[in-house]
Length: 368
Image (cartoon, rainbow, N blue to C red; front, side, top):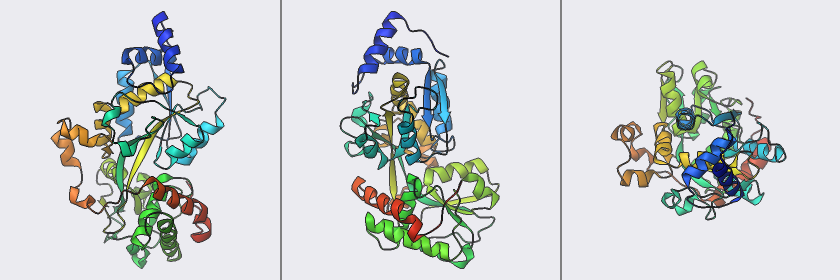
Protein backbone atom coordinates (compact mmCIF):
# COMPACT_ATOMS: atom_id res chain seq x y z
CA UNK A 1 0.00 0.00 0.00
CA UNK A 2 1.36 3.42 -0.96
CA UNK A 3 0.18 6.50 0.94
CA UNK A 4 0.17 9.85 -0.82
CA UNK A 5 2.28 12.27 1.24
CA UNK A 6 1.08 15.63 2.45
CA UNK A 7 2.86 18.76 1.22
CA UNK A 8 4.97 18.74 4.36
CA UNK A 9 5.56 15.02 4.00
CA UNK A 10 6.61 15.44 0.38
CA UNK A 11 9.11 18.11 1.39
CA UNK A 12 10.44 15.82 4.10
CA UNK A 13 10.63 12.94 1.61
CA UNK A 14 12.67 15.02 -0.83
CA UNK A 15 14.97 16.35 1.90
CA UNK A 16 15.54 12.99 3.52
CA UNK A 17 15.98 11.18 0.23
CA UNK A 18 18.66 13.68 -0.79
CA UNK A 19 20.56 13.55 2.49
CA UNK A 20 23.31 10.95 2.58
CA UNK A 21 24.50 11.10 6.16
CA UNK A 22 22.20 13.25 8.23
CA UNK A 23 22.43 12.43 11.92
CA UNK A 24 19.47 12.26 14.31
CA UNK A 25 16.76 13.55 12.01
CA UNK A 26 13.27 14.64 12.85
CA UNK A 27 11.79 11.18 13.34
CA UNK A 28 8.25 12.41 12.72
CA UNK A 29 9.27 13.70 9.30
CA UNK A 30 11.18 10.49 8.60
CA UNK A 31 8.14 8.41 9.55
CA UNK A 32 5.90 10.40 7.23
CA UNK A 33 8.37 10.10 4.36
CA UNK A 34 8.73 6.36 4.94
CA UNK A 35 4.98 5.85 5.07
CA UNK A 36 4.69 7.71 1.78
CA UNK A 37 7.04 5.16 0.20
CA UNK A 38 4.87 2.40 1.62
CA UNK A 39 7.35 -0.48 1.39
CA UNK A 40 10.61 -1.83 2.83
CA UNK A 41 12.51 -4.60 1.04
CA UNK A 42 14.76 -6.79 3.20
CA UNK A 43 16.93 -9.77 2.26
CA UNK A 44 18.53 -12.72 4.06
CA UNK A 45 16.53 -12.45 7.28
CA UNK A 46 15.31 -15.92 8.37
CA UNK A 47 12.69 -15.58 11.07
CA UNK A 48 14.57 -18.01 13.32
CA UNK A 49 17.82 -16.02 12.98
CA UNK A 50 18.53 -13.71 15.89
CA UNK A 51 14.86 -13.24 16.72
CA UNK A 52 14.16 -11.60 13.36
CA UNK A 53 10.64 -13.03 13.20
CA UNK A 54 9.58 -10.97 16.21
CA UNK A 55 11.70 -7.99 15.17
CA UNK A 56 9.99 -7.81 11.77
CA UNK A 57 6.60 -8.30 13.42
CA UNK A 58 7.38 -5.46 15.82
CA UNK A 59 8.25 -3.11 12.95
CA UNK A 60 5.06 -4.06 11.10
CA UNK A 61 2.97 -3.44 14.20
CA UNK A 62 4.54 -0.04 14.76
CA UNK A 63 4.31 0.99 11.10
CA UNK A 64 1.38 -0.91 9.54
CA UNK A 65 1.39 1.47 6.56
CA UNK A 66 4.75 0.06 5.44
CA UNK A 67 4.68 -3.33 3.71
CA UNK A 68 7.73 -5.48 4.47
CA UNK A 69 8.83 -7.32 1.33
CA UNK A 70 11.17 -10.16 2.36
CA UNK A 71 13.59 -11.53 -0.24
CA UNK A 72 15.44 -14.88 -0.05
CA UNK A 73 15.71 -15.47 3.72
CA UNK A 74 18.48 -18.07 3.28
CA UNK A 75 20.82 -15.86 1.23
CA UNK A 76 24.42 -15.42 2.36
CA UNK A 77 26.27 -12.12 2.75
CA UNK A 78 27.84 -12.36 -0.72
CA UNK A 79 24.36 -12.96 -2.18
CA UNK A 80 23.12 -9.77 -0.53
CA UNK A 81 25.80 -7.65 -2.19
CA UNK A 82 25.13 -9.34 -5.51
CA UNK A 83 21.42 -8.51 -5.15
CA UNK A 84 22.35 -4.82 -4.87
CA UNK A 85 24.70 -5.01 -7.87
CA UNK A 86 22.15 -6.84 -9.99
CA UNK A 87 19.38 -4.35 -9.21
CA UNK A 88 21.19 -1.01 -9.45
CA UNK A 89 18.79 0.21 -12.11
CA UNK A 90 15.78 -1.71 -10.83
CA UNK A 91 13.35 0.02 -8.49
CA UNK A 92 11.08 -3.03 -8.35
CA UNK A 93 10.51 -5.55 -5.54
CA UNK A 94 13.73 -7.49 -6.24
CA UNK A 95 15.94 -4.56 -5.19
CA UNK A 96 16.87 -4.72 -1.49
CA UNK A 97 16.71 -1.55 0.59
CA UNK A 98 18.78 -2.85 3.49
CA UNK A 99 21.32 -5.58 4.16
CA UNK A 100 22.56 -7.48 7.22
CA UNK A 101 25.99 -8.94 6.46
CA UNK A 102 29.12 -10.29 8.09
CA UNK A 103 31.58 -7.64 9.26
CA UNK A 104 34.00 -8.05 6.37
CA UNK A 105 31.26 -7.46 3.81
CA UNK A 106 30.46 -3.96 5.15
CA UNK A 107 33.72 -2.29 4.07
CA UNK A 108 33.64 -4.29 0.83
CA UNK A 109 30.20 -2.91 0.01
CA UNK A 110 31.36 0.58 0.98
CA UNK A 111 34.43 0.36 -1.25
CA UNK A 112 32.22 -0.65 -4.18
CA UNK A 113 29.80 2.21 -3.55
CA UNK A 114 26.95 -0.21 -2.86
CA UNK A 115 25.79 1.37 0.42
CA UNK A 116 24.90 4.87 1.60
CA UNK A 117 25.70 6.53 4.93
CA UNK A 118 23.13 7.20 7.63
CA UNK A 119 23.58 7.74 11.36
CA UNK A 120 20.76 6.57 13.61
CA UNK A 121 19.67 8.67 16.57
CA UNK A 122 21.35 6.22 19.02
CA UNK A 123 24.64 6.51 17.09
CA UNK A 124 26.73 7.58 20.09
CA UNK A 125 25.87 4.39 22.03
CA UNK A 126 27.28 2.13 19.28
CA UNK A 127 30.93 1.30 20.10
CA UNK A 128 33.38 3.15 17.86
CA UNK A 129 35.21 -0.04 16.89
CA UNK A 130 31.98 -1.53 15.52
CA UNK A 131 31.03 1.17 13.03
CA UNK A 132 32.24 3.14 10.05
CA UNK A 133 32.81 6.69 11.35
CA UNK A 134 30.83 8.13 8.45
CA UNK A 135 27.84 5.83 9.01
CA UNK A 136 28.03 3.57 5.96
CA UNK A 137 27.75 0.43 8.11
CA UNK A 138 27.58 -0.39 11.81
CA UNK A 139 27.46 -3.46 14.02
CA UNK A 140 24.06 -4.79 14.96
CA UNK A 141 24.69 -7.91 17.07
CA UNK A 142 27.29 -10.55 17.83
CA UNK A 143 27.55 -14.16 18.94
CA UNK A 144 30.09 -16.98 19.12
CA UNK A 145 30.51 -20.07 16.99
CA UNK A 146 29.07 -23.14 18.71
CA UNK A 147 27.98 -26.75 18.09
CA UNK A 148 24.33 -27.83 17.94
CA UNK A 149 23.94 -31.57 18.50
CA UNK A 150 20.95 -33.89 18.08
CA UNK A 151 21.42 -35.97 21.23
CA UNK A 152 18.95 -38.62 20.05
CA UNK A 153 21.53 -39.61 17.44
CA UNK A 154 24.83 -38.52 19.00
CA UNK A 155 25.69 -40.21 22.30
CA UNK A 156 28.54 -37.90 23.23
CA UNK A 157 28.78 -34.41 21.76
CA UNK A 158 32.12 -33.19 20.40
CA UNK A 159 33.94 -30.93 22.84
CA UNK A 160 36.58 -29.61 20.44
CA UNK A 161 36.89 -28.92 16.71
CA UNK A 162 39.36 -31.79 16.29
CA UNK A 163 36.81 -34.16 17.83
CA UNK A 164 34.87 -33.82 14.56
CA UNK A 165 37.35 -36.18 12.87
CA UNK A 166 36.40 -39.07 15.19
CA UNK A 167 34.79 -42.15 13.59
CA UNK A 168 31.68 -41.90 15.77
CA UNK A 169 30.71 -38.77 13.85
CA UNK A 170 30.45 -40.42 10.43
CA UNK A 171 28.13 -38.50 8.06
CA UNK A 172 27.18 -36.21 10.93
CA UNK A 173 28.76 -32.76 10.62
CA UNK A 174 27.71 -29.75 8.53
CA UNK A 175 28.38 -26.05 8.25
CA UNK A 176 25.45 -23.61 8.34
CA UNK A 177 26.30 -22.15 4.94
CA UNK A 178 28.52 -22.36 1.89
CA UNK A 179 32.04 -21.35 3.01
CA UNK A 180 32.64 -19.74 -0.38
CA UNK A 181 29.88 -17.18 0.26
CA UNK A 182 28.42 -17.36 3.78
CA UNK A 183 29.98 -15.23 6.54
CA UNK A 184 28.71 -17.71 9.15
CA UNK A 185 30.48 -20.62 7.44
CA UNK A 186 33.64 -18.60 6.81
CA UNK A 187 33.90 -17.77 10.53
CA UNK A 188 33.31 -21.45 11.36
CA UNK A 189 36.37 -22.33 9.30
CA UNK A 190 38.32 -19.59 11.12
CA UNK A 191 37.35 -21.06 14.49
CA UNK A 192 38.41 -24.53 13.35
CA UNK A 193 41.68 -23.06 12.10
CA UNK A 194 42.47 -21.36 15.41
CA UNK A 195 41.79 -24.68 17.15
CA UNK A 196 44.14 -26.29 14.62
CA UNK A 197 47.01 -23.97 15.50
CA UNK A 198 46.50 -21.07 13.09
CA UNK A 199 46.65 -17.44 14.12
CA UNK A 200 43.53 -15.41 13.19
CA UNK A 201 43.84 -14.34 9.57
CA UNK A 202 45.22 -16.13 6.53
CA UNK A 203 46.71 -18.87 8.73
CA UNK A 204 43.37 -19.63 10.42
CA UNK A 205 41.72 -19.92 7.01
CA UNK A 206 44.36 -22.34 5.77
CA UNK A 207 44.48 -24.39 8.99
CA UNK A 208 40.69 -24.43 9.19
CA UNK A 209 40.39 -25.79 5.65
CA UNK A 210 43.01 -28.42 6.46
CA UNK A 211 40.96 -29.56 9.45
CA UNK A 212 37.76 -29.54 7.39
CA UNK A 213 39.60 -31.64 4.77
CA UNK A 214 40.41 -34.17 7.51
CA UNK A 215 36.77 -34.21 8.59
CA UNK A 216 35.73 -34.70 4.95
CA UNK A 217 38.31 -37.46 4.37
CA UNK A 218 37.06 -39.24 7.50
CA UNK A 219 33.58 -39.35 5.94
CA UNK A 220 32.15 -37.08 8.58
CA UNK A 221 31.43 -33.92 6.54
CA UNK A 222 27.96 -33.58 5.03
CA UNK A 223 28.08 -31.04 2.15
CA UNK A 224 24.67 -29.45 2.70
CA UNK A 225 23.68 -26.26 4.51
CA UNK A 226 22.92 -27.27 8.08
CA UNK A 227 19.84 -25.80 9.70
CA UNK A 228 17.17 -26.63 12.25
CA UNK A 229 15.35 -29.01 9.92
CA UNK A 230 18.46 -30.99 8.95
CA UNK A 231 19.41 -31.39 12.61
CA UNK A 232 15.90 -32.63 13.44
CA UNK A 233 15.73 -34.97 10.43
CA UNK A 234 19.10 -36.49 11.30
CA UNK A 235 20.65 -35.49 7.97
CA UNK A 236 23.18 -33.33 9.86
CA UNK A 237 23.01 -34.23 13.56
CA UNK A 238 25.94 -31.90 14.30
CA UNK A 239 25.94 -28.35 12.94
CA UNK A 240 28.26 -25.47 13.71
CA UNK A 241 26.55 -22.09 13.68
CA UNK A 242 26.25 -18.92 15.73
CA UNK A 243 25.12 -19.65 19.28
CA UNK A 244 22.01 -17.52 18.85
CA UNK A 245 20.86 -19.53 15.85
CA UNK A 246 21.42 -22.85 17.59
CA UNK A 247 19.65 -21.74 20.78
CA UNK A 248 16.69 -20.53 18.71
CA UNK A 249 16.57 -23.80 16.76
CA UNK A 250 16.75 -25.77 20.02
CA UNK A 251 13.79 -23.86 21.42
CA UNK A 252 11.74 -24.19 18.23
CA UNK A 253 12.22 -27.97 18.21
CA UNK A 254 10.96 -28.08 21.79
CA UNK A 255 12.77 -31.30 22.67
CA UNK A 256 11.76 -33.18 19.50
CA UNK A 257 14.54 -34.05 19.07
CA UNK A 258 16.53 -32.79 22.06
CA UNK A 259 19.37 -30.51 20.98
CA UNK A 260 22.43 -29.68 23.05
CA UNK A 261 24.13 -26.37 22.33
CA UNK A 262 27.73 -26.13 23.46
CA UNK A 263 30.62 -23.78 22.93
CA UNK A 264 33.78 -25.71 22.00
CA UNK A 265 36.72 -25.75 24.38
CA UNK A 266 39.03 -24.45 21.67
CA UNK A 267 38.69 -22.04 18.78
CA UNK A 268 35.98 -19.84 20.34
CA UNK A 269 35.40 -17.04 17.84
CA UNK A 270 32.97 -14.15 18.24
CA UNK A 271 31.58 -12.39 15.22
CA UNK A 272 29.82 -9.10 14.63
CA UNK A 273 27.28 -8.59 11.87
CA UNK A 274 26.60 -5.16 10.39
CA UNK A 275 23.61 -3.29 8.94
CA UNK A 276 23.67 -0.98 5.95
CA UNK A 277 21.36 0.77 3.50
CA UNK A 278 21.70 0.12 -0.22
CA UNK A 279 23.01 3.08 -2.21
CA UNK A 280 20.30 2.21 -4.73
CA UNK A 281 17.48 1.63 -2.20
CA UNK A 282 14.07 2.15 -3.85
CA UNK A 283 12.71 3.11 -0.42
CA UNK A 284 15.53 5.04 1.29
CA UNK A 285 13.36 6.58 3.98
CA UNK A 286 11.73 3.29 4.94
CA UNK A 287 15.26 1.92 5.11
CA UNK A 288 16.32 4.69 7.50
CA UNK A 289 13.23 4.18 9.63
CA UNK A 290 14.03 0.44 9.76
CA UNK A 291 17.51 1.30 11.01
CA UNK A 292 16.05 3.63 13.64
CA UNK A 293 13.81 0.81 14.82
CA UNK A 294 16.62 -1.76 14.93
CA UNK A 295 18.84 0.50 17.01
CA UNK A 296 16.11 1.65 19.38
CA UNK A 297 15.84 -0.04 22.78
CA UNK A 298 12.87 -2.02 21.45
CA UNK A 299 14.72 -3.32 18.42
CA UNK A 300 17.87 -4.15 20.35
CA UNK A 301 15.90 -6.12 22.95
CA UNK A 302 14.18 -7.95 20.09
CA UNK A 303 17.55 -9.32 19.02
CA UNK A 304 18.41 -10.20 22.61
CA UNK A 305 15.22 -12.27 22.83
CA UNK A 306 16.65 -14.18 19.87
CA UNK A 307 19.80 -14.92 21.93
CA UNK A 308 21.93 -12.33 20.14
CA UNK A 309 24.05 -9.83 22.01
CA UNK A 310 22.89 -6.52 20.49
CA UNK A 311 25.63 -4.02 19.76
CA UNK A 312 24.18 -1.60 22.35
CA UNK A 313 24.07 -4.36 24.99
CA UNK A 314 26.43 -2.67 27.46
CA UNK A 315 24.56 0.61 27.21
CA UNK A 316 21.21 -1.14 27.72
CA UNK A 317 22.47 -3.05 30.79
CA UNK A 318 24.06 0.08 32.26
CA UNK A 319 20.76 1.92 32.00
CA UNK A 320 18.69 -0.93 33.41
CA UNK A 321 16.85 -1.56 30.14
CA UNK A 322 17.36 -5.35 30.00
CA UNK A 323 14.71 -7.45 31.80
CA UNK A 324 16.23 -9.98 34.20
CA UNK A 325 14.47 -12.87 32.49
CA UNK A 326 16.32 -12.03 29.29
CA UNK A 327 19.66 -12.02 31.08
CA UNK A 328 18.77 -15.35 32.71
CA UNK A 329 18.00 -16.93 29.31
CA UNK A 330 21.54 -16.39 28.02
CA UNK A 331 24.32 -18.97 28.42
CA UNK A 332 26.68 -18.55 31.35
CA UNK A 333 29.18 -15.79 30.78
CA UNK A 334 32.04 -18.18 31.63
CA UNK A 335 31.39 -20.08 28.39
CA UNK A 336 32.44 -16.97 26.48
CA UNK A 337 35.63 -16.19 28.38
CA UNK A 338 37.88 -17.70 25.69
CA UNK A 339 36.15 -15.82 22.89
CA UNK A 340 38.36 -14.10 20.34
CA UNK A 341 37.05 -11.03 18.49
CA UNK A 342 39.08 -11.04 15.27
CA UNK A 343 39.88 -7.71 13.71
CA UNK A 344 38.46 -6.71 10.35
CA UNK A 345 41.88 -7.24 8.76
CA UNK A 346 42.10 -10.75 10.23
CA UNK A 347 38.59 -11.54 9.01
CA UNK A 348 39.40 -10.24 5.54
CA UNK A 349 42.56 -12.36 5.32
CA UNK A 350 40.70 -15.41 6.59
CA UNK A 351 37.81 -14.82 4.18
CA UNK A 352 40.15 -14.50 1.20
CA UNK A 353 41.94 -17.73 2.09
CA UNK A 354 38.70 -19.66 2.55
CA UNK A 355 36.72 -18.37 -0.42
CA UNK A 356 39.65 -18.85 -2.79
CA UNK A 357 40.99 -22.11 -1.37
CA UNK A 358 37.97 -24.16 -0.28
CA UNK A 359 37.44 -26.06 -3.53
CA UNK A 360 41.11 -27.02 -3.82
CA UNK A 361 41.85 -27.79 -0.17
CA UNK A 362 38.56 -29.38 0.95
CA UNK A 363 36.84 -30.23 -2.32
CA UNK A 364 33.34 -30.44 -0.88
CA UNK A 365 30.77 -28.29 -2.69
CA UNK A 366 28.15 -27.30 -0.11
CA UNK A 367 24.60 -27.41 -1.52
CA UNK A 368 21.20 -26.24 -0.30
